[in-house]
Image (cartoon, rainbow, N blue to C red; front, top):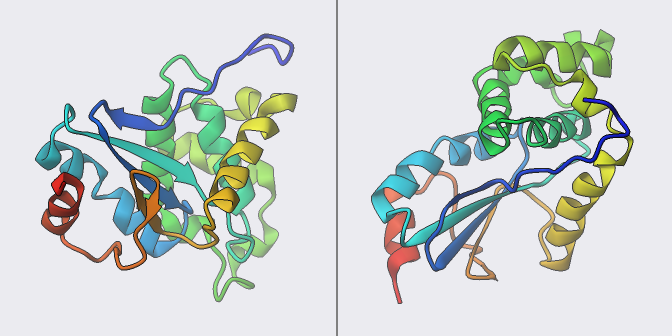
Length: 187
């Protein structure tokens, strides 16, 4: 992609129902990874015509490469495959989470990794070419939108869940999918 071309980030949205379930996730957080793993099952159980699931990326500074990985996900969403590519990146990071994290958030082999190393790893695991999309100078507007949206809703940690614009403080990634679906479909 030429950096001067126009680009569009495909929204990270699945389903088209009236109930809106927003998941604020940090890609390397183990609890966010667990929640991401429940996306497809939740959508299937609840019904695509009844629920809309939206992923909101919640970069967190103690996950040292969080910003780079979030930008990779959003870069993937600008590719022709859109949200499918973004989901492939999220799944690739989730499946190899330890390779994108630091021991105790401050040590380990990633101390010698550069952002280019992280991008290259994600490209290998996802099968996508991300470097050009990652380098779009104005892609930061999409990153900033996710951050601003979370802050406007009082969300500072991941995973956090909202249903129809209301934060669900007692909802967690460890809850069974059936519990999520019951809450989503309650009137």
